[in-house]
Length: 254
Image (cartoon, rainbow, N blue to C red; front, side):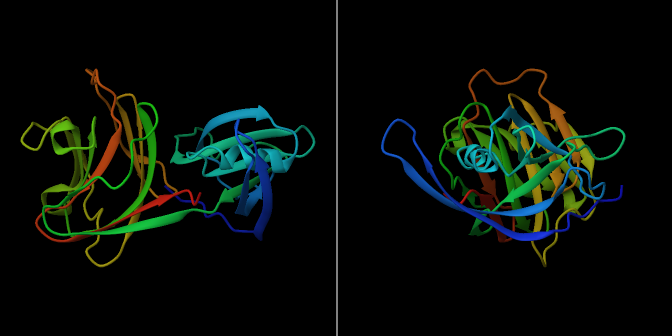
């Protein structure tokens, strides 16, 4: 499948906002790169929509994106005030890339945190995510078996899912409920990891449904748990195998 590349047609959109959340107003200063226009057929718009509303001005739309940690980009229609927020995951679209006519797309500036894991190390680096769903934008450098675990309480004892990229000598991606449990889903992915450079992916979890893809590409691994857990997943962690691994998580810069 041919991957369409987004060409930045403007470098930076910068604005200062004052947002009131019931306490004293909080000032936001953030950068957005303009990634394209809705009538430009070279701009892919397969990212998942998390909200669509009439927000009015471009600045108000940017504020809505800044207030939502899952918002990775937004598009705004100047004539109608339509504001569409999208996250870092992609969805399958029939008939080619989707777009909103006359909508200008702004990609949010993100920061990243990097972690050096020793062999067989487990790391829960982030606080609990809200609800029973999240989108993780991450990268990893490993020779094989880079594992993401989902936990109810941020401990090893609370782990309910093991998602492994590059298992069995970097040849397949699998998911199971525990380290010694049988494989629930297997996809052949030879060479999905690299021991020499970081490779970036996205992972979406939504109430027992998983979707995993390479950066700016559609999912290559999808699975829905037929018997989802009663207790919500609240934490994700990184786990290394027999050799050290380098992980990076991309997140908002608030």
